[in-house]
Amino acid sequence: MIYLGIGSNLGNRKKNIENAKFKIIQNDIKILQSSNYYESLSWPDTKNPKFLNIVLKISTSLSPIKLIKLCKSIEKSLGRKKALRNSPRICDIDILDYNRKLINKELILPHPRLDRRNFVLLPLFELDKGWIHPLSKLHIKTLIHYLSNRDITSIKLI
Image (cartoon, rainbow, N blue to C red; front, side, top):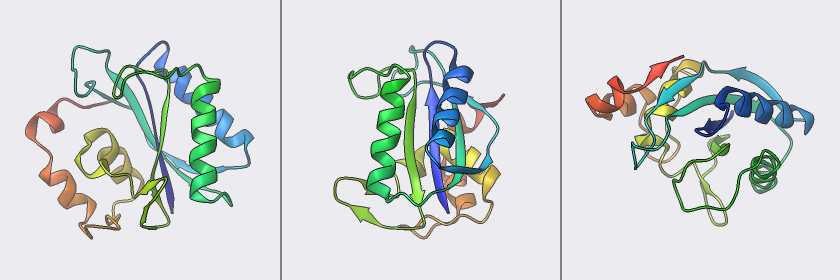
């Protein structure tokens, strides 16, 4: 299975994510499932606007590299500008897992920080309760259990 994470914390966050989904579909990518929306604090600066996030389960014939290039192109088309890492953004699209592949070249798969992110783990769990991290081999329930109480209590299902 291929999972994408989409987030937004600028402008009309829900509309930004829906526009990203529309552009994904326009590029011959099939959305098999979409999680609910989750609102979480911005990281690392919680003073920034809150994020809205979803996880998609998709099907595509694109390679991981072609898929990430498409994702970056979609972000740009929605108005994302080059900015400091972790700064507020209109749209952020990440490949979380691509058929359990381990890649560590131009693209790192699985996404290197997904196991510590409440806004990825909770919507991913919603879509795949049996998901196992391809590298650490830890079950998603274990990864969620490792989250801090603050990470668990600060995220809201929208």
